[in-house]
Image (cartoon, rainbow, N blue to C red; front, side, top):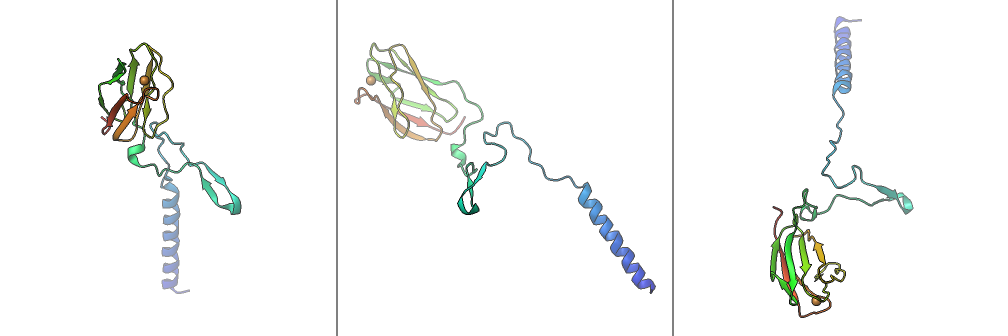
Length: 156
Ligand SMILES: [Cu+2]
């Protein structure tokens, strides 16, 4: 065998050994658990017909619909003399609104695009948090002339 051939073989062996050592030493990429992550660490997938996976939990939720990390105390509002007060409530996705019914009759809160509140009896409260910035009209389901507005800004 020629010296050149032996040299080439030795160089190749050293390169292969170096590659294998590098591959074993390098730590494998591992996801860092995020305690504030509301999603499960791995998407839950179920196999449907024809073997196509059905993704039950994707992560395509727009950032403005992600729940805020910390919920602040509610903004206080009240219902008195069949009037919502203040007329315009300004808050943010991390701050709910809490209505107290100071009347002697029940009321409800119906916010556009949201599930209606139960009946709020005299002296009771109802708390609700809107998670998407925007302007929302609301009214009382029992007395439709009672109206109000909620303005949701960006998280504080
Ligand atoms: Cu009412």
